[in-house]
Length: 196
Image (cartoon, rainbow, N blue to C red; front, side, top):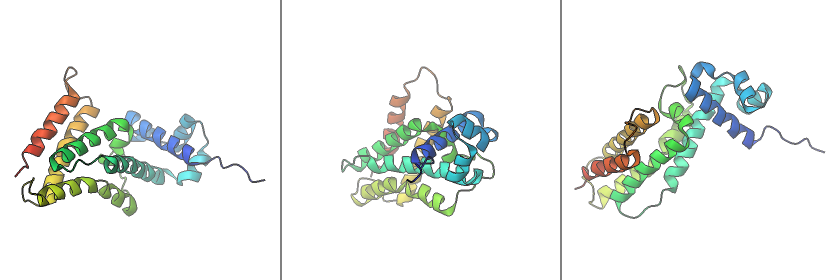
């Protein structure tokens, strides 16, 4: 009779979520494999078995963040109106960051000094923004958006949402503000600036 597999996908995801939380709340120095294993209720053997070591764990954490983010971006419904679709993608970006704030810092900051994602993980990160570029291209080709390189609109849109999300996640917005309303109004004003 085969032994049951104890180092499965559920444990891998639990370890990644716990590692992300340790990193985002206590910083890079708190991310030790021994502490992670204890916090997740498993052994360091399980961590080594699933990831190999700390650099591979951090890379897996980076990749998992982009997998989740990319899945949400691809799942965003399209209306056929590039303006509304671009606003919707900005809202989905925020929803994704709020759903996985513990992964956001590893995805978009230098949360772990010296960490460089593998080429495969970097490519995964770049591909997650494909829906954004597609919507912008559709808007340009339909005459809805200004005739500029699609990357110009895509990067500026990304910058707006990233900045707002970073302010929100870091607690830098006024506590009495309507964050969701301000976020959407800002997106709409930004996209309006790209209309032809």
